[in-house]
Amino acid sequence: MPKLTRAKATTRRPQFLLPVLPLALLVACGDTGDGSATGAAGTLDGPDVIVNAVTEEVFTAGSVVGDGWDTFGSVGSVQFDAQANLHIFDSQANHILVVGPDGSLIRTVGGQGDGPGELDSANRPIVARDGSYTVMGSSRIDLFDPSGEFVRRIAQDPMTTGIVIASMALPDGRLVTSRILRFDDSEQPEEGGRPIYLFPPLDGAEAELLYTAWDLPEEPADEPTVSGSAESGLRMNLSAGRALEPRLDFDVLTDGRLALIDSIGYRVKLIGLDGSVTGTIERPIAPLPLDEEIMEAARERFREQRTDFLASVSNLAMQIDREGAEGLTFAEEVPVLWGLKADWENRIWLERRGPTGADGGPTDIVTPDGDYIGTLAPDGLRTPSAFGPDGLMAYIESDELDVQTVRVVRLVALEPEGLSLGPRVRATGHGGRQAGLDRLRF
Image (cartoon, rainbow, N blue to C red; front, top):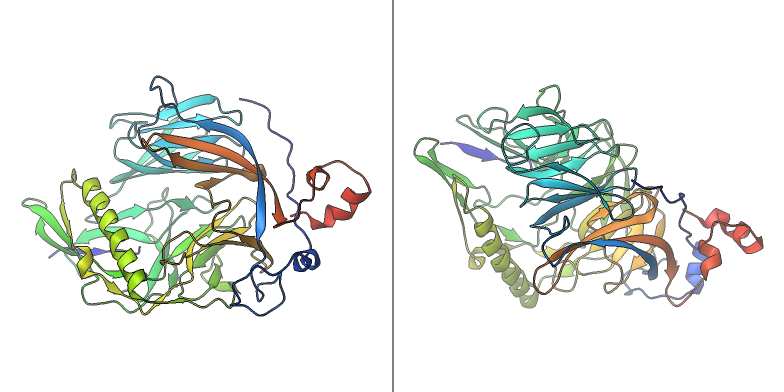
């Protein structure tokens, strides 16, 4: 029986740096934490120091009328390049819209069809900082140069090489993934934990194991089962699984290291290119205790996700069935962290779970060196869909009619709650006060 294995054109604005306040000033702004940490305020060991984000609107793309280039079918992803161009992948139209820093359309890449340069069955593009593309598909990888010209197609075979599902790449072009789907007739070796692989798409080599992230012990029904054959039709049965498991999330820093979360507690691991843990970032924040309210909220989220999931796979050749919410099992504690993303200045944005165990909690901003910058309140600025250069951030949003827009803002400063520093702190000019604040920039 086959078995599925899973390893889960305008002028640029001058570059500037965002100001951050010294820890001594943060301490003076008061303690707004939850009492779970007892160290000095403004440090990883201390309580939360709430900061407010000062942003400015840059542009919004998305037409309600339906006759413009920015009438989106379904925005699958957004990513910036180093020239501050925004690349919007419309998975329904099977094309990428390249939008300049002023919000105008520069070009369209791809389109409907299965030929060279067309993007039918594309999952998402990975945009390099030079604007070139690695477009991941269900059975292929397509490469495009920075001008949007098609370069090469690489086939993926689920019965032999497997299907690499990736959303990011190292600076050298190797893909980073925790998910490789492979169907074959042989038993696959069991991997302890959750493996993360590096895959070089150009040379046809096998994916290389970089690091094995921690995981809870598997439950007997965790693994999906596949029956049938390519001739008679394949059928996959998925259990409901275990809710509130520690999430595996990671992002690539500018030096090629991964910042990674995989734990129940508050712990970020920094993974080197040789697979070693080069450092950890931790805060003494305890996991939430599991209760019936949290479990029922998890079941309701699962019901919504299951409906969306079954609808999304209804047009596949393989029939996929998934157990209902009543089959969910639960871990003993609710992990602290929900998600992780690194911005272009190497700051790590860490989303903490909300009171029901989902997203919606506060967001900590830290550096790879373990410096604590501050915490965004749950009702404050959220982690964007994509970070860009010079403080740019893009958000995929939907209105009450499910009309999608992409809003781009610029993060100008992070200020302690209740304290306004005024424009001179954020300016790039000179002067007595500004000169004294130069060392506070990051």
